[in-house]
Amino acid sequence: MMRLRYALLIAAVLLAASAIAGVAQPQLGRSAGMPAKTITVSGHGTVTTVPDRASFYFTVDTRAQTAAGALARNADAAAAVVTALKNAGVTAADIQTSQVYLSPQTSQNGTSIIGYAASTSIVVDTTIAKAGSIVDAAVGAGADGVSGPSLSRSDEDALYRDALKNAVSDAGDKAKAIASAAGLTLGGAQTVVEGGGAIPVPLAAGAKADSSVSIEPGTQTIDASVTVTFAAS
Image 1 (tube, helix red, strand yellow):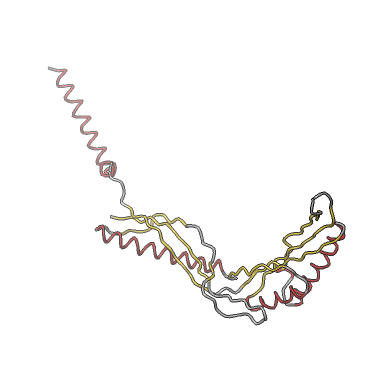
Image 2: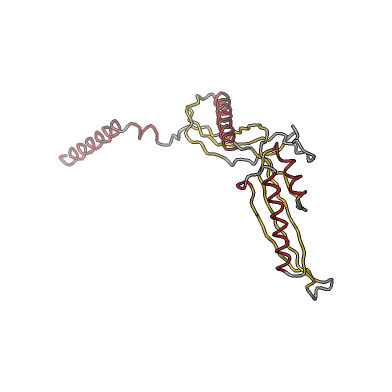
């Protein structure tokens, strides 16, 4: 009989201790097996702008009987193009030699070298307003290859940040619509993950440059995307 009473006493003490622990940490009892409600959406934002910068690649090709002769002739031709670009208003910081190339030229049967070909590629960054005249100057000075333009904005980073803001706003609108449809109350943003920024894409044509070579800047769309997780209840 004493043993039974002792066992009942121990059981009562353990039960009381469990109850006290549950009161001291009520969140443990309520949260177990009940994950927090969240809504995760993707947002997309864009900014449309007019490019104000243009980049071009100019190439100068020369040939000679010897490798040294081809390189020397090519160096002189490239220097003439660079001088013409500077005279046309391009600063030295916006002119870069991107490649120097030399290769042997063989006979038709490939058994002997009959000369050498050399080329120099020059990349130039300029304003849209000067783009046409820059092309004219380079070709007039001897450039026999032109590639471009690659159009951009000088304040592209700031415009991308604006597109990010639009993307976050778009995500918020989507989350509100989902919460309303699901009968939930939308809370604050819990996480925000930036997506990849898209390279600006040229759209419809706009104004032209003041030169015989017409450069149409058109417009560009700068894209941004985000993934946002919101709390919900």
